[in-house]
Each structure stands twice: as C-alpha cells, then as structure tokens.
Length: 326
Ligand code: ACO
Image (cartoon, rainbow, N blue to C red; front, side, top):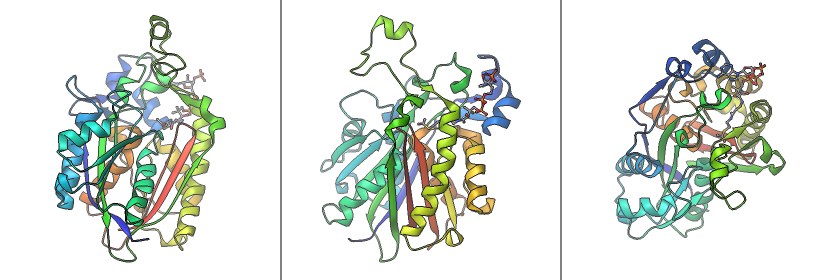
C-alpha cells in the first residue's frame, strides 16, 4: 500500500500535579517506595471541568496545527481510551463535533494501554489502502476517575493526559514500516475494572464494593510486560527488515521504570535511545506513547530518517508495537 506516516503530533496534560508526598498523606506509602519500585515522582490530575474529551480536544488541535491540516480535511477520528466520557456516544464523536471535522467518521478503540498503537496500526491501513487520506488518532485518559485512592497498590501508578497524531501519506520509505498487535485473553483476570458494564451494571452494591475502580495483579502484569516489550520490539524490527542495532529511538509504554529497564537490558540498547517521562506523568495508559513522542520531538531527539519503535502492553492482556521511519 501507499506509505503512511505521522505528520503532526500534540499533547495535553492537566495543570494539577499530584506528588508522591501528596500520596503519603492519602495512603500508607512513601516517596522512597514509589520512586524505587516505579520511578514515578508525580502525575497530573484532571480538574473538575476536564475529561478525556476536553484533553483529547486540546491535544488534537495541536497535532492538526503541526500537520497544517484543517478539521474538514479529516476522514476518520480514532480515540484509544479506557476512560471515555460516556459508554456511548464515543469520545471520537464528541471530538468530531467539537473540532468541526464535518467529513470525518468517528470510532473509539478499547485496547487498554496499547490503544494508540492499535489506533495508528488499524487507521494507518485505511490510508495505505487508499480509502482515506487524513486520519486523527488520539490516546487520551482520565485514569484518576477510575483509580481507587484507598488502594496503595494502584493509586501511585496512574495519571491523566492526552496525546494525538495526524496520519497522512508520506514519501516512499518513510512512515509506518511494520506493526504487530497481539492478545492473550487468558490474562484478563490480572487487570480489569469490574463495575459499570453489562456484567455488573452500576448499582449501590457495585459502588459499595468499589467495583468502579481498576483492579490489578501487579506482579503478573510486570512479568508479562517485560516479556512482550522485549519480544515485540525484536519482532517488529525484524518485520521491518531491521535489527535492534539499527534502532535510533525506543518509545516504550510508560508504566514502571523497572519494566523499561528490564526490557532495555535484554535488548542491549543504550539509555540515550530510550524515551522516559514516567517520572513526571506516571502511567497515562493510551496517552503515554503520543505524549512521549511529542516531548522527544520537541527536545530535538528525533531527526529526519530516524528509525523508531513504539511498544506498549496492557489489560487484555494485549500488546502492540510499531516500527516507523520518521
Ligand atoms: N507503598 C508502599 N508499599 C506498597 C505500595 C505502596 N504504594 N504498593 C504496594 N506496596 C507493598 C505491597 O503491599 C507489598 O507488601 P507485602 O509484601 O507486605 O504484601 C510490597 O509493597 C511489595 O509488593 P510487590 O507486589 O512485590 O511490589 P512490586 O515490586 O511487584 O511492585 C508494582 C508493584 C509497582 C505494582 C509492580 O508490580 C508493577 O509495576 N507492575 C506492573 C503494573 C502495570 O504496569 N500496570 C499497568 C498496566 S497498563 C494498563 O492497562 C493501565
């Protein structure tokens, strides 16, 4: 198909900062524990007027501006999120109206943290096939609204943010080179949110049992994450006709510095080639990769022609990796 690449990128984070010291006052934890076990120092928390949609809108406007794209040019809007504003309509439809993207189709993708990688992979194909020319892919989350601030095992990990990317046809040899997506539903029990769906619809009981919050088996997710981050990176580079030695920049899902360290060690790549910002934002699920990509670009860490790998994992359990030539 026709080559597809990222021609614009944007991000948004709320102003309010929640530090490890703040968390020490809420649950039985310490800055020292959080930093050594996760690498996280602070995260952003959405204000009362903010939601996944409002953050997605701000990030999208920035991405469209960088790409030089008018809203009417957008053919498709894809939002990867596990915290949509409502179960329906989709957050993508809200975004379509607010942007004035009058011609665009709109859909949300539920693929947990790899929602952005799933989004660019699937939506990229609509351009590669010739169906569409301009697609907006967003990763946006208000995880603070599904985080249990009485559970120290999870509440120290998560934050709120949005990132957005414009996909368009690019020069031959550039853009998305290869992608792999995977799922192992046998691990569904390790990371889930039980309440509010058709199995356990919202009721006084689900609220009393705190079923509207993330539940996680951290150890199992950790082991899975280290394995797939390493394997998917190697595999996607191979499918793109490259080896790890060719890689210029790894943009990993930002969940825990120890997961990134373990993967980087196995891959044998130097730290200068790895983007890390989880110390400032924590885990923002689908937003981590587009936000990290935006910051790396702004910092001058991505040059024309660089070979990048974006790699992510999350609830499902699912994973995804994309190799791209910038
Ligand atoms: N402060 C102090 N102590 C804590 C805290 C805390 N915030 N959280 C847990 N502990 C305690 C535990 O209770 C446990 O105590 P115990 O031994 O008395 O029971 C002890 O610390 C050690 O717990 P471990 O589970 O061994 O800690 P571990 O080193 O595995 O780190 C962590 C836990 C950070 C959750 C880690 O397992 C992890 O990051 N896992 C991956 C999670 C992840 O990436 N999830 C997101 C996936 S993406 C998505 O879809 C949103």
